[in-house]
Length: 294
Image (cartoon, rainbow, N blue to C red):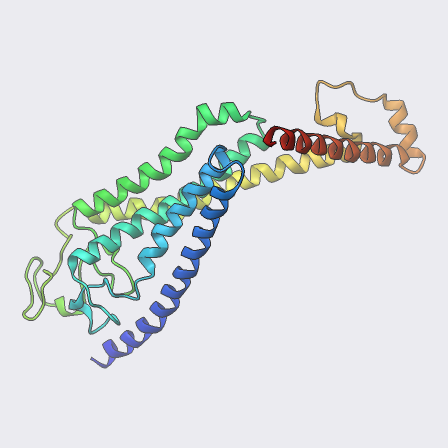
């Protein structure tokens, strides 16, 4: 009992920090949604729609973590601080957790893939919107709903003796020595709940997607973008802006060599012309956009 009391005190401190941080995260994501809806483009661009989905997923996950343990079953109040719920509230809490966390992560992958398509492969907005965007939304929402529904159907949402309900099997300390399916006197939830189904396998697959697949996708796409941009910068540093367009005529090698011998002035001039051209192009696009908005 002394060990349980010590763990309960630790659970209190951890849950207060977690729930308070989740409230801040909810406010931040809500602010992002507000900014998107208040912007001139609103939800008319693919980027804004992906960011909107990512913010919604974060809000769902943050709300599941901002309950100060009130939705944890009261059966484990001797080890979990402020546990005032039941199995129904625990299942709802687990459903929101498994729905929101993967959705937010997978939408982060979608955002990286979107930028990769634009930066490295020069895909147009029309191509991304018609060919790619259905998958950029369907995969995060579909996979998250699939895992959440599967665990709910197989009784895979149980108190994890911490600050959540994402344990595939219910096995608290008071169930030691009790057979699966039996309810100890003074408690309500049967011991071993979820052990007679595939909830553990489903949980392992979901855990693999969240912990390994999502970070790997994000890391690979970021690495590909970084490598592509680095190559472009090196090419511009050597030959100027025209090198980015492979169909554009290249400068005479003799001119470049002579300029390099002459203190590198040719390369510097090319870089300056490239910067001026980029600035003029950006100003032109902003002016045309302002005129179209008016």
